[in-house]
Length: 361
Length: 165
Image: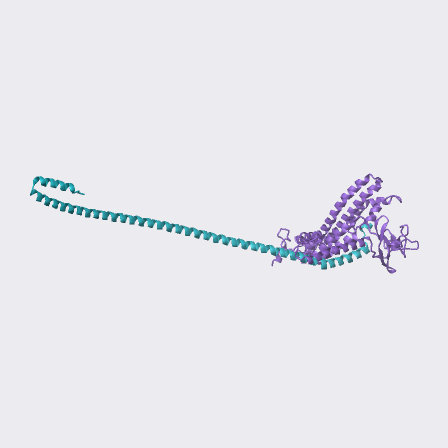
């Protein structure tokens, strides 16, 4: 699994690898793209227009909070500060020469050491903005529902109501069934969280939050936890005693339970990779199209590049909604599988499920 | 490992904390009231719709009832009209028959009375003729006794005077 992922990312970041070999001073699209889709301690809206963000560290010296602007000198060059050094987007302890301190790990490889980093990075700040927007929008809507109780929706309420109803009727009800109600808060939250952040990421200068593996990992793990903790008897029965499978595949050679247990984890894993890869890929494509201008060093390529990038941006607006929908839909399907009551369709239509007969007694 | 696929502790921490807070707050203050309001409104609409359906059914029943009443009334009316028409016909028939009968009776009576009158008149004529005959005969006899010529003239004049009806 890890190999596949690494391969995937090697392909994704092919341009980045190729560009690193170019000499200093020349435009490197790979570096530019990696810089844009990655996280940072400052928020760079445009070249030279940056907002320093707070750095929060916890380590040898206890809790340390300071502005990330301390890492930059007056020429916007990186410098060590207060015993810390910022290198390749990570903060490490600085040694006497102002370089990251290293240790040798168990495998005998050299490794940088640093404190635990809880900094409000660009991604975290962007997430706070999205959360602020979420609260603003949905608390307003909730208020509107209280105000015009029983009446037709108005304003922003009428824009979001069809979406909320869609999540409820077409995602939750159809995939979860009668017990859909207790999953509604999570499904709605995750849908709008992903959608809002996808859209915020499309704003020039925005952070690539939903294209960050950590964010998608957390969302996928929450889906996994909800699935596992709401799994009923029949869900676990399907995993450890899969009906319609010969007994020796379950108790003799436990292939089926193994496959099913792996299945528990591959589902959220696919959620994590799908969202991360889709959003990151979109950003990379748009940035690559812009890079063409600088690679060819020609004004002529500009209009073409902008036309393609504009088209891609519209496509990404659609993808932003689509990925939020897919994540929510698949989460709902996993929840549906966990709470579904299996009655008589366990035998896959062969009529040979022994416990289906037992259940009817 | 590629930095793109390396989860970072700080973001993980903030993401978990933020997302859980958002989930909790939005659930409590947004999704719960919104879902409740939506359900309430849907229930209201359902109730209104089913009420309208019920009203429609009632209206239909009422209409059917009216239709039935109307049909009944129409049948009743037709029956009454038919009866009345029959009665009128009967009445006319009876009256006509009665009138005919009366006419016949009156004609018969008239005939009888005519016959009677005729008989009476004839009897009277006969009697008068007899009396006249007797008178004439008497006078004739008396004249005969005087002059034959005169007697004849007398008879002649008498006969001329007498207009037998």
